[in-house]
Length: 264
Image 1: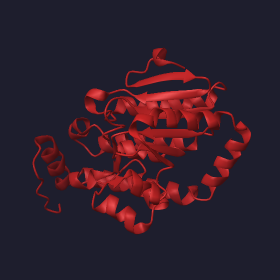
Image 2 (image 1 turned 90 degrees about the vertical axis):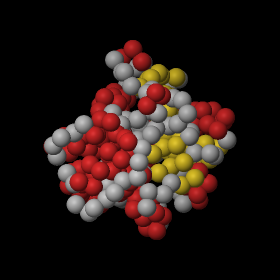
Image 3 (image 1 turned 120 degrees about the vertical axis):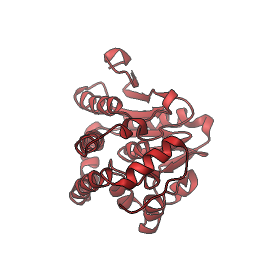
């Protein structure tokens, strides 16, 4: 698997058993559009069938891991069906990544917001630069995280911290995220790539079948509740997309002004 395999938004290369997947839209701070979402799903599907792939390592090109969803794309939707389809596409891609039987790592520099953090949450391990910020700021748009964020954060964090992130839109710094168990390791920014690759190399040398069964057993304890919650999240997001507050929040973001929400 390589960048020549038809990917436009990802740079994909196999390095001695480690599939390095770089989000490659630096001009948009690696914002996730429908094309990137489809390509992430394609990477997960291909990696599942490729015996040469032992571990997946996600990173972001440029100054940040990922700014989240491409707001300009979301703002163009005119019916409730379009955002519902978009959310379903995101959820399917991230669920496929989470369910992949091979270990996955996200190496996060700069910031991971919204759908970018949700992508990292679907991975098994998160290695984070010490100056990174992690957040789901969708509440400022009249929305909520729609790609599993409300559920994976609520399952992985104390309720009070999850509410700070989801309902207040607060970001966590790397050290606080580590203290709450949201990330695996914090390293200096200049050492992020090497740390992510070192973890990937360690995993690639471990017995694949034991890793596969171990991941299945760990996820099996929480998956039923998580899956039903993610479906509820999808339906809730479809409702929010149709509200005036969502339209106002999106316009305000694009116009770089403070939104005036009215509760309708």
